[in-house]
Length: 108
Image: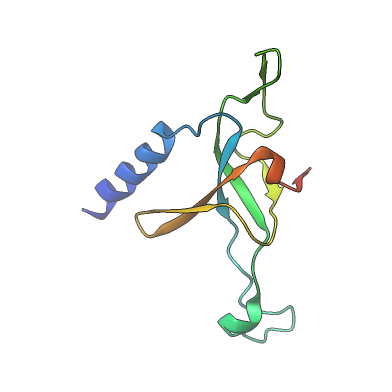
């Protein structure tokens, strides 16, 4: 039962393609322990601004109607703004959709 639900959710995400210049990202889990081994409560963890690109749209159109491809690809690690994006929940996992212009940078 559990494996079929996992396969179904991964198939759903693989079949999902954002439109235009939008990017579907999954936030990285927040650190729950300091380097010294102290456990952090949820309130003090703060918001995670790093995410992994799960899926990306084909790109935006310029004034001439030409397709301008995105500079991020699935698997890239990106820096997110503190606020913004549209939250999407699939099988108790939270994802966010951002425009590519809202992303602050890509980690190399």
